[in-house]
Amino acid sequence: MNIPTLQSVLAEGQLIAPDTFDGISTRAAEYMGCKGALLSASALTHTVHGTPDEGTLSTSEMVWSLTRFVEDNCSIPLIVEVRSGFSDNLRIMPYDLERIVKAGAAAMLLDDRTFGCGSDSPEITLVSPEVFARKVAIAVEAASNTDCMVLARSYAADQADAIARCKAAQAAGAQMVGAVCMHTEDDAREFAGAIAGSKLWSDLTVKDGSPEVSAETLMELGYGLVFITFMEKASWFGDIDFGTKNWANKNTVYADLHDFDGYLLDEEGNLRDYHYIFSYWKKWMPLEKKFEDLSELGKEAFQEVKK
Image (cartoon, rainbow, N blue to C red; front, side):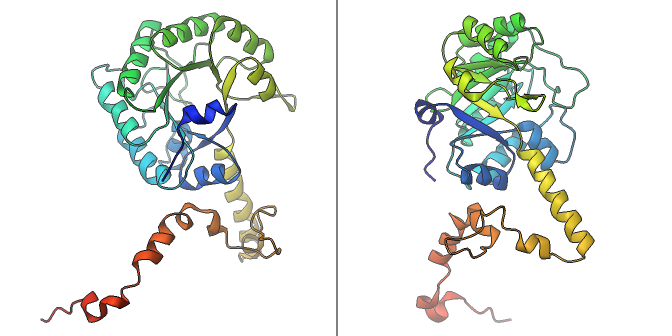
């Protein structure tokens, strides 16, 4: 499947990338017009593996998800959240990150948390700025001679510390950097004043019912990549909404007749099966039609085994 590079997408303007975690969520992101997405290690841990996110998702689990769930099912570039690089052992990291690149990642998003530290961990622990920079350099080497970009973000709580860490990551070869501690326009301006080049915004957050900073303002300040997280929550809501209605009605009328707020209606207003927006209608179903007809082979198609 022809997937554009992340560089080509960013060259067209700011990319607002949602969090995805499987083939359906990524296909949904593509369907609603997103030009790229973040393959979230946290959401993948929660939804696919059913465990708290303590930062221990393995390379093999991410590679399997990237290749089977996503790369065969969509045509948008995927930024893969590799977090610590799957290890604090710098001798192992090159092999692990090369596997991510070969699996089809459009970019690797590396951060400065220690291995075993995830979104559900009670405490956040960080590697030193020097080790963070070394990890970025390893990622750059793993992605060499490919179109895979290397992105870095810091989880340091203090903005000055985060800026220093991001500068070290840039010096090590990171092509875009950002910090989790930033939420407001003032934060964005201070970071932009200290960090040259294109930057990433870790997550658009909300306060008092409004975004703390707009995507437009971020674009003006040089944030070419903005992450927004909602896919995991939306999936949970859909399951609960359909589930409670169908359970109360003791049938599936509510789910069967739901038109996804009009997304499932064709041009004549007829309700289409929701599977039509899924990936296998794009790739696998045409392949089945191409190869399933064996009539021209006649009796030679299948051989009877005589006992």
